[in-house]
Length: 222
Image (cartoon, rainbow, N blue to C red; front, side, top):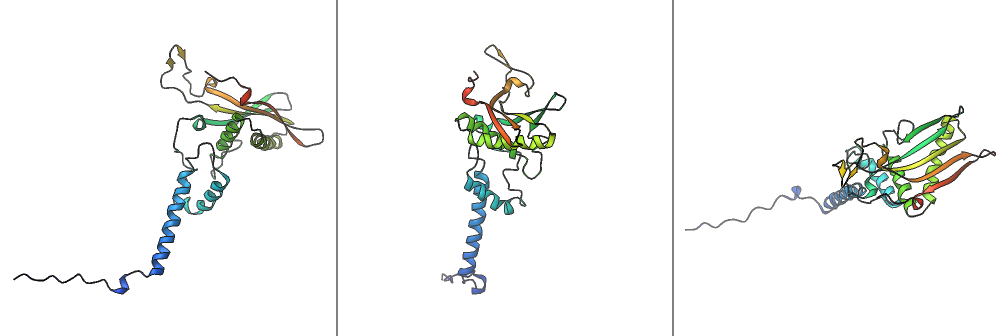
């Protein structure tokens, strides 16, 4: 004779989450996954994030940074091979009272070396480069003027020159089709100057910016 199998016993009601508990768990899970999407997608936006994206990043930073999920502070990033992924920085030349010229790099020890956001000034340099390439001077002027004011106050000089530099990566082969590339990956032959401006203090004590060059005035590099 075959024995009939009894249906599995239902779990006790005490072991089943209530609808309210399930709703809370679903809400927390959604917030967690949405936060992960926000921080990960911040590296997919090309040049720089939108204003809304930056606000969301700052909001979720309170949660993602303690868990080491903060993409912006990570030394690793997605690379697409476009010029926006190249290294960007500012080169600041300051005239000393003795007439000599001192050169600083931003980000660097003088500005932009903080632990809170070590890549802030590199992102600002990318913004200046990309905006200069589309002939939009508004953001480049505001960013370089702010950097210039910092160096004017810090050094006591009355004029500084600021250049936005893009450094191309060194090719794997140093000789390609008869063209020889520098062995030093930091050689200036890999650099392209995309924007240059002078920030000075006028006789009335106000900070002024004079644009000297932008990307549209530069011949393309072959």
